[in-house]
Length: 164
Image 1: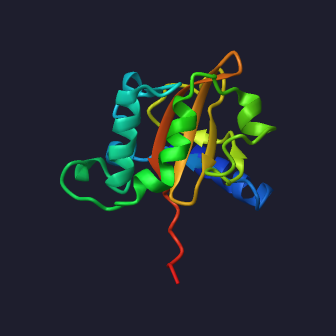
Image 2 (image 1 turned 45 degrees about the vertical axis):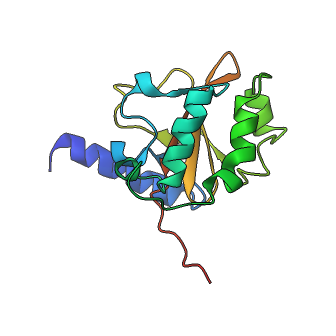
């Protein structure tokens, strides 16, 4: 086993054994996220074009290969529309809105996490992104001076519980 693999295995072992409550948010492969490159990240507040791009991704069930071909979630506008409206509002969202005030809680009720792992990055970002899940997607917010300025949405890598 190479030194790099040993190092990664050691980090995973320590992370998993240190605390059963530690969770990480992996950024999925290009097909399952709203961007293929960092330069395509959605800007906040959402523009009309950004909103439509995100809505197309959500309608396709989080699979970019299906955009325009297969409608997986026909209720995406109904379910996510109010959230997208809030993300498009001219009043900028702040880190405090997301973490303390929980302004987006009606739509993003999951725990707020900072352990976002994006293997595309050459090094960890200077300011950690913040991720919130809704059960199907991870909504990853990037900040600048405590203001949320960019968004990446990725399909959750966790297995979903069967619907009853």
